[in-house]
Length: 88
Image (tube, rainbow, N blue to C red; front, side, top):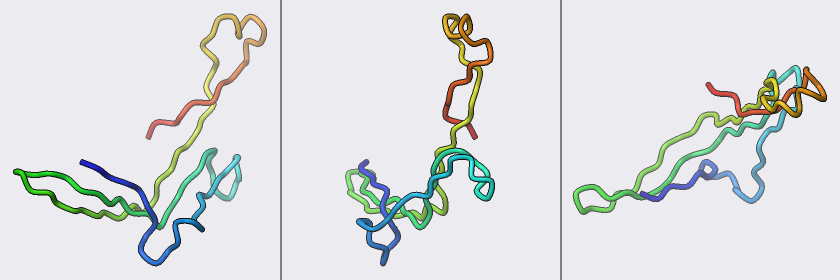
């Protein structure tokens, strides 16, 4: 299977940009997200190659801050935090 994420038809991918939030209170998260996207590709099934397309309403990569697990860091700053990808 081969698949790509691209913009919806009629939207120039060269002019597309993700929305980025650095704790913007109006967006309510830390990270980036995109909309107006679609997944397109090809797959083989029973020896036949099939084309497929599926809409992506929202794709988000959200970051959260967690305590840093490194003991050496804790010696310097017991309250040290590190960014991690937030699970959903």
